[in-house]
Length: 283
Image 1 (tube, rainbow, N blue to C red):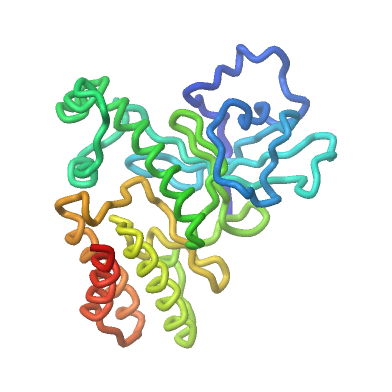
Image 2: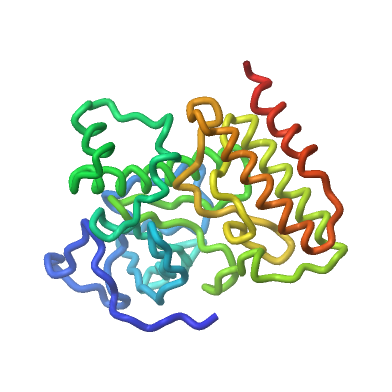
């Protein structure tokens, strides 16, 4: 994969010219200190040393709500063990004036903030409200990834959150990201196994009372023969959101349409029924 070379972008909360000393390598010191950290126990590849540095290697994905960059974090003197390098995906949510909020309303149903002023600002899409929504989406995805990781679901490990920048595990090998499922052509004998992986994850998610909300072959990575589900800022509460089961049905249709188009014989009604049964079993 070729990464686009570009200057390190401005990130809210990080003032490079205010740092007392420039790092010996890379473009900035590690942003670990002062960030919100992911769940314990942490994978051993997570570098927490304050002497670590980071470099932006370019854009991996550009989207309506956020851009994702590839970031390398390492310790210049090589003393950090057992991991000497961490390859991270830096998801940087757009600020209020640069984001598109046309999809927010349906996903935001069932989510509440305590202060009525903030609720009004978000509802009316004021400048202040758009900033709140931007931060809320970043926090929502970070929290969801932490819980999903704890449930054993195949998601990237959430390393840290600093305002609108979330660093998470880069799925792939040696700084090269795994492809999206939509970009691949799995062998026919692998299709059934991949569908079963996705089905199992969706069942665990439904048992928790959630659905992805935007699930498709574009939000699933194929890491060799393992599926990893990404893009969770819009995760939907099936019970708290009045449209929860509508989002669940759409997730099922998107997934089944892709696998059926590759020749896999499956019953989307059966999958939807199983998921609804799991979601309502707690009632």
